[in-house]
Length: 472
Image (tube, rainbow, N blue to C red; front, side, top):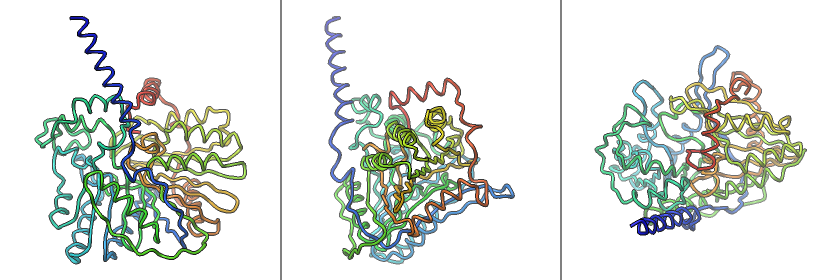
């Protein structure tokens, strides 16, 4: 009997280990991890959503990204493609947020009603129905008017939480969720109950994390979600036009193909002349590749500016230290990770990362500030590298984490190389300087008061890095 048990246990270990290995290393679906063609463009528009405390100690909220998206929806005539990770109005009952989802949904429905022939497609993540625990009123309204809604099938992606996901793939993925949950909703306590199967799927911690809008006129690549509880977050986006629109549409077609074959329209190819701005689409692992390459190419004449929600990837942190050792001045503007949709957070991962960087031998060249957040997050994902003649910008949906940079989540960024005299280069540097120097408001604060971390949380942080069991 013991021998049979031993054989069965050995067989389980072999299957379990093989499942882990395969789903971490398996081939990516076609069209993932894209390094697009380099396009020449005349101009790129920087858009910002900023929440800050003014000199009168009052919170001010500016929604340039969101309102530009609404304007582009109004001006579209042929097609609209939206890919948005969070698209829901779920909140705790004691919290009040801007009705972003309701406004955005009404704008799409009005456009489809006024122009029935227009093609509108919305890709999103299953998190918005908590993996089938309850329906989304907004998604159902969009479907009823004839708008194509796709909840992305992320099972086909690699596993970012492999020790758990192997168990789930072996025993849990075969269950079907049909609502009627009985467990409390930890993501929004006043919303409907969650099923056990939904929580089991949620623990895989994988997502279509993209955030963008495309029409025949322009595309907006953003760090922000159309999500009520994100309504006060600070975010950043770039509005682009030209042939890169077709690259984005092809990438979105590949994401849709995870569920079904779908053909998205294209715009006519436009002539490109040598200009002062180059732009390139990067998705999934190619974002990480270019982030690391660009940091590694810096020297003492360059400066690096990073504004981001999560800085956790070891490769990026090591490259930052190496650049600082080359006497590159690095400016990190980070969220303190104290708040998430009105709920308190532990300060992971940024507080221990900041503590590590400040203790490093090259800390004199690494300058760090917290964004002065209230109940919102500093949510951008942007890197600016200042060089002598041209600046490099990488921005979009990807945080600097293993999950976001190495072919686990679906992510969309753009890479911009712009001569220093161009509008986009000037405005991007001005954005960072405005926040860093607190020009006109109290945007940022020093790290000293928040750089300490209780020992237990530090141990949790280290274990999360080893086991991969984390949301960052």
